[in-house]
Length: 279
Image (cartoon, rainbow, N blue to C red; front, side):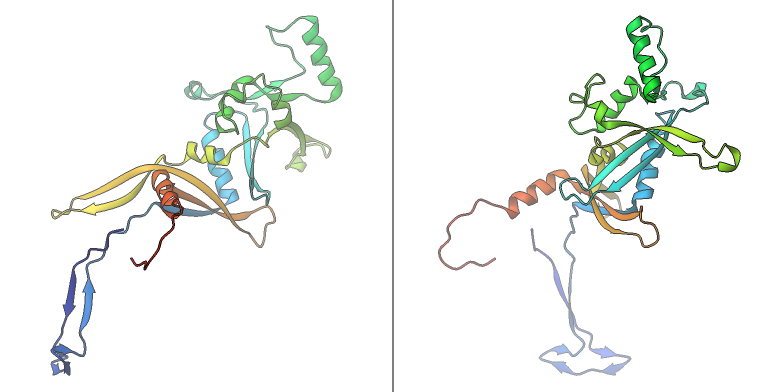
């Protein structure tokens, strides 16, 4: 990093209209002033809770998924994969509005009903087996296609017909929140998709793809921002005191190229050196 800087000695010879002592031509109030060097940043961070981040993800994907009812980010404590992202879907009784039909899809598939393309005895028997087993809902293939972009392995490793989806999808039954309006034994049927999402890929989808790394101001006052491609990392900070399901985290935004350069500079090829070393 360059260290070139202009230097000025400020030498006030009077203070409050009174003479001050001098030492070899400098007053006792003399001081050095440097022109600051440029500060080049390759990273910044945002502090928030897992609830806030979950709502951010839900807000974005709710514009695409008609049946999405919630997102939850859990902390696992595993240093290799500290976070688990969960998507929850539930059948939306409302139709997709006409003005949203071009960018929104339904997500729930009823396993106990055969569609017009699968009406033979095999599919009718499978639908009956699902009904008897108490398994009714899953997500459809269109939803799997759009989710595959944010999964470990990406789109190529998560085709809709891949048997791995059975490990990621779970039908769950949750008590109805408004008990006064429903029978005491009523419950909501939801489809949970988890254990497959790469949180870094989700952040790349919903957060800016570029970042400002430095800013200059010319003699005319014109401001110029320099941009770089940004990547994101997530750091667990601590659990909140009042909610065992909520914790604080940092989302770190950094310049991919500069971090790679820094890693090379900090970990150079080791070589034997004889003599005095100074910088």
